Image (cartoon, rainbow, N blue to C red):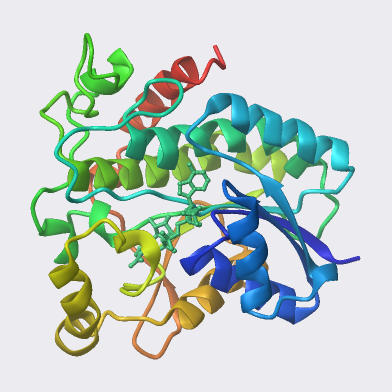
Length: 315
Ligand code: NDP
């Protein structure tokens, strides 16, 4: 049978390119988990995906109710789950004030980390039950959360501190909207959320890999300077960022190429190692990359996991 893969945020950018690559391979049925049904339908059509290769299901990661609803709908659909890709993200580099999810969490961490945390916890059993040769849970990471890299050292740097803001619920009322308790900074909130993504992947690996055989992985697909992720950035930045990445840092990667990379992590029979953060070199060969000290801190991963469980209502 065909593999069955859920991709969050498959209505644009990396998620869409990955959905296209997998659909075209003829080996996968893609469940596009998107907040905007019509946009997703148009996107699928615009890249020429054949109807029988995808299903669109509504998911708004900025609402825990919506996450639960999505999981119920998916379970009722009777489809198996072989691979889950947590890809969707928001990035608000120019926001002066925080905005919030339906549950009152700062939007970037609430969407990118907490929404995906609940989603992947609730779908773990479905992954366990899959009889597919290699079942996987993939959480898209980023170089920007990794302070052991040049890009990760552009201020404001990711830093989860002692997690006091997360502990307080990131609601900006009786506590800070930032994980480390500092004043709101949209660019940093995104980077912090990516550190949480990478910590979560490793904590999943420690807790579940041996018992379940599920492969847990993260990746940095390269700098895809053309995606909607930068939609809220100032116009001059959006104009100059792609050529800067192409010619100066040479980290630029097209959406199509990045989609092929993520599709590889979904389906390549040789990428079954668990607990790994994949990157690609100039020749587009994948290699196991090192995470920064904070992004590989096992104690912090455990704490983020436990606090997140409370915030999303799992304990
Ligand atoms: P895009 O903005 O193009 O895609 C993000 C997707 O997330 C969109 O489909 C968007 O939906 C969706 N999304 C946002 N909020 C929600 C929500 N509340 N519920 C459901 N879906 C939501 O950005 P990219 O493709 O660049 O980003 C994809 C991933 O790649 C992210 O995890 C990002 O961190 C990562 N990444 C990107 C890099 C880059 O250079 N671009 C580099 C490294 C990592 P909608 O279409 O409705 O807006």
